[in-house]
Image (cartoon, rainbow, N blue to C red):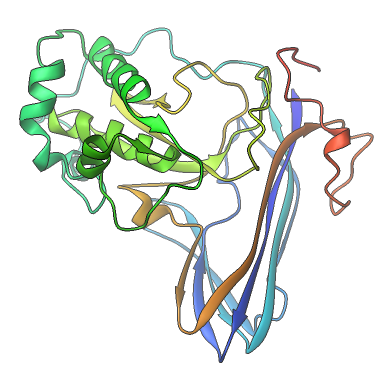
Length: 292
């Protein structure tokens, strides 16, 4: 097992009190146990946790007037296994699929599959095998949508991204999901951390990462069109229909985000402790070599 340090430091400046819903800490996963964790809401006068529709652990907090500092820091164990499935299985029958999964076939705010029926049918409808069809969708999005750092917008959908031709990781995920739903394959949006284990550091600032999961053969499989290659050490925070249900912060009231820092990198737990300053000179990932 490898140890990954993940977390975030987010500041909000408030003119008066405001309410925020936060999704920032990893979901409970026996395959990726959280060994240590700190979640500090700073000056927040009240907070409560609850489990939302998608079984994500959310926090509702009351931000006070002035500067509010929110910090999460955790040590998580991950395996050295890649996340690519060897076999995908068949697409589920709409007539017999579990009712709870039907929502992942419907158009949503950012995954407007109803606008992509003809496009998806023309591009991918001829591929018989469901796994090959979804992989073809991931390949198409990866090869035809240009990744442009900081080009994300909160008001643009998958169909608009396909027309525009560029976006960020959340847009790659939305396009993959919308195209899958357009050909009746359940798909959902996932956000979390993705360290660069066995992967060369791309040089861009660390951030939360978004990708998709597709339901084939009775289980969910990772498809990440942004990178479109097997990866190690994904740590899931939230899952849902699209980015609306997985936002790291949804704020109601006069609050402005003034700082946003995220980290996700492999460390030696004997050398790095929870709460230490973020020191990337101590990271073990970011190269093709996998260091255990």
